Length: 458
Image (tube, rainbow, N blue to C red; front, top):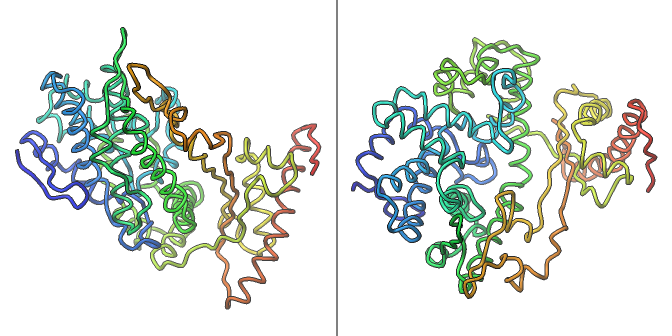
């Protein structure tokens, strides 16, 4: 086995087959796609990419398989490791930012997503199946099995849990890696102990991933790391602003500027032509294309040039839904925000006397730390005396937390300037009061126009 030194995991071993795959152009492209988009504008060290993350997930998958499934067929083990290595192959420029754009513009007549299937997962599967770089290295049957592993359609539940579960190799790596490169301590947990306490819980029909009862405190550390990284890094104000500016720039480039390369790039139709085009693009290519002289001046170029110069939108409004607005506005903003976003942006733009396309209204939520122990993948099970017990019941710390608690926020970002701190405080106070009234008014007006019978009561 060959090895590469990684700052998070130490030496990562690679088989000859894995090294050949890593050296292909389709995989090397991941070196040019940053893990956290433009988070380096607030965390200067956050320049790490999907490339090293993919190596880390492969490494942790190998460790988990060796611990949990020592008697597994060697070929099945290798395919599981290759699935881990290739799991992010379909990410587009700026990682998850591209996913939001693809979700809006993919060809719904030609592409039918399964429930809970993410668009980048479909792109990843297509690249694995159709890549001219992978075909000489992995047989067609093995490529199909890898895609089935990634989509959860092959093997026992424990295999799915290793790659896509509440304590999967992906989460273990990105928490440690993002924490390391951002220079924060929030994502640190005892990875060696966590792997050591993993168990396979087996019944008559399947095998699932569980944690030995002695590992409850280690698991608490892992779940808290995920919670703190979400609140302190992934939901950082500047990270949210830059992500939303990129999305808005690309969408305006498609809808208003009519930039043909962007239209072709984000109209996913699952064709060979799409995949051949997709692998040509990365963070650098997208930036260079939009800012090139060949692209006419427009919204996309203006916003990307602002990002390049770190002339960012400001957050002019930030409110927790539970602490503001009428009761009907709270409910509607939580459940049907897309119905109101454009009207809110237009009204705020009128207030600021700027172009409505440059105002961005955005909502997001942060789950309770107890709820984050479960997520959509299902609960984490604790193995006690041959009996499975949900983690949140076994942990004294997590039993004391109300899982229904969830913080939901609305932010508004706009290209405004402040002359000094006094001017900033004065304007933000004014925006705070005025924009809340605007949001309440928009919800009432849209409901009335659509025939809604809700009456906003405080």
